[in-house]
Each structure stands twice: as C-alpha cells, then as structure tokens.
Image (tube, rainbow, N blue to C red):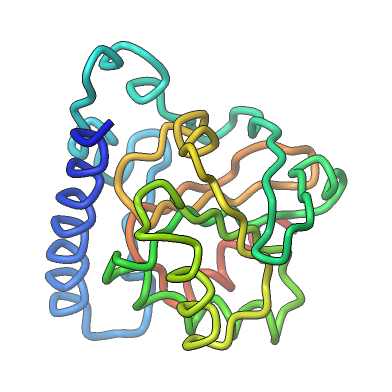
Amino acid sequence: MRTAIIGVILIAMLGWAFYEALVTEEQEGGATSETTEEGTGPSANEFDIQQEDTEADSQGDWLKTGEKAPDFTLQTLDGKEVSLSDYRGERVLINFWATWCPPCRAEMPDMQKLYEEHDVNILAVNLTETEPGVQSVETFAEDFELTFPLLLDEEIAVANAYGVQPIPSSFFIDREGIVRQISLGAMTYDYMVNEWNAMD
C-alpha cells in the first residue's frame, strides 16, 4: 500500500509539471486540462501506478467515456452519507483530489466558482488514505472556503473503482449515469462550464 501512495504522489508531481507546461503553451483561456475521449488526449497507461500484487486488478481497467459510472457511498466531512445514486436523473461532476496535490489546489477556486455560479452537483472525493489525517482535509476546506460536498475515500476504494491514476481526475456524469467526459489534471473554470453545458 505504501508503494501505491508513493506512486500517487509521484504521479501528482508529474501531473503538475505537465499542467504547467500546458499553461505556458496555451496563451488563450481555453481548457488547460488533459481530457480523455476515445482517440484524444493521453492514455491512462501513461500514468500507470505500480501496486504490489494488484497490477492486473481495477487499477489497470480505468473507467472510460460511454460507460456507466459505478455507484458509491461515502461520508462527508460532517459525517453525512452521500451516494452517487442520490443524484439519479441529475448531472454530476466527480472530482478525485488530495490536499498535497498542487494541481488539485490550483483548480479548487475555479470549482468553487462553478458550484456557486452554475448550481453544479459536485462530489469532491478526497483520497483520504494518502492524507496525514482528516484534519488536513478540514483545514484545506476552510482555507479555500469550499462549500460543495467533500467526500472521504478512506480506503481509496472508490478511486480504485474508477481506475483513478493521476490526480486530480474528474468525471462528468450525465443524467443517465453515463460518463461523458474524463479530465486528467487541473481544469480551468471555462473548461468546466463548457463540459458541464455539453451534457445538457
């Protein structure tokens, strides 16, 4: 498990470097995140996390666009249980993140702005097993003044079910529960708005 955590940290650092390179390259205000649709963007294989005895399990079978989003139930910071199925018939943005991840920190203000201005259903799933403790998540939420639900994936079971490898990773889920877009890396506000509206 320590190997997996170290792998996630290394991938986050690589993701940040990749994000910085894209921001420098793109002078206009479009999306700076990497997206994966069939035939576009980098393959998740480029971000493989090596895990002891689990190389062939769900980590290798990442969720793809066009597939049904797996249901899950997690607790929020204030102890409430939230399930993806609670949002049946609604669009949802699921974001996997951690407090120590620089690209995650970079996109959080834009995600909060999206939540406030567009009434978006956001489920921000924290990889809690990689955190020093829940207190760091609480401090992060206060520092960034986050008001959307922060879910605690304490055993990284949901992240594994979605095949999350780099973080942040975001999944745009339509009203039928189908994954319509996957974004690898930090997203800009404009990108989030465009992808959210594209599911209407």
